[in-house]
Length: 287
Image (tube, rainbow, N blue to C red; front, side, top):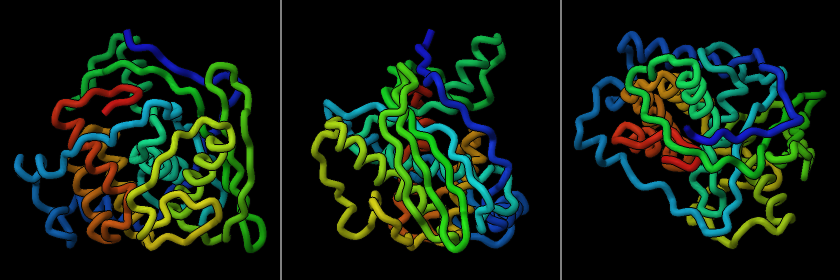
């Protein structure tokens, strides 16, 4: 039976806001076969899927195991319409930002826990769902909130020790009220990296994309990723949650085509989907 990791002493309430109205348009267009990039209307061939598949970055030996929990959002200007909550959309952007790093051993928690719970209840595996792997469990759980006030907003984050439930680091960063989700996600990743470095838990690693993108800033930096691209990413999340591999590919690839290769999180999510489709397992450090 796979081991389950948990964090005691923290709980969040479900944010009811949802990501950009553009997300609804992306989902409707995908279902209706409306105008979209060519990759979004044709099913990918096996050769195309193979080209998308690449190994997960090799984690460094002392990389801390980190997972992402709920991010509570209030009154986000981009939180309108769509099938995936803004909270979940932000959580997935942060997860992808951590997954691509070699100095973090990202532990996938959300889909893994849902699959294990289905197994515990004797329910059949979801159609097309990958088999359940094993989870080493996270050492740290990242959670927080983003609350606008006036012209700015407060991003409050907590790094929780999974075993004890104790908060090992908490911090606040101010952002513009009109902050976009990708910029917020990258700021969360940057703050987390900085706190793990303070704890002496971060092995040295140089991000190969840091020269042309700010993937983990410690202060707010506006990304070049549009809301349309972020909405396409969220459409990919919604499809991946149903293990609709083709729908997930369309969403993530549309996000890349809209924003370009600077949308590192969509690129990472697309490779993850290709690995899972090719036989990966749902597990804490896999695929």
